[in-house]
Image (cartoon, rainbow, N blue to C red; front, side, top):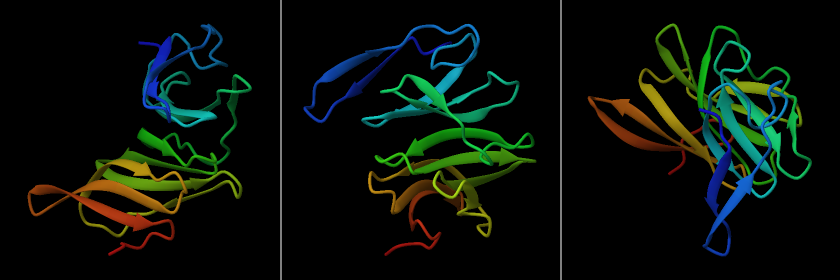
Length: 160
């Protein structure tokens, strides 16, 4: 199901409707493919789509109304999900699944580097979110048969 419109709460606390045109070529926000789990900031919409045959993370500049290239972010052998972006658009955090193992990655758009925050954890992880400043990442972790919440700093270390 394509995203034809996205509802969000603005800073004023009221719903706002964002409308973007349909692009059958897949170069815009709305396409014939699935666009999943969008997260919206004042300038960006980050989402997952299968428009290129794999479930990848995409970034759309809502002001310029165009997709932004994310070199080094997506991998053919990973299934991406639940992206989140810092308010300034520099940092993107997202979950992946690869050969049955889940992981949380942080991508820095300035350096074009992707790195795992959770590769040393012996647990399932999911649903990451990054705060507006881009210095904290929160995600769910399954240890000892229950889901808990972890908070990491951008360096990949748990916070108190």
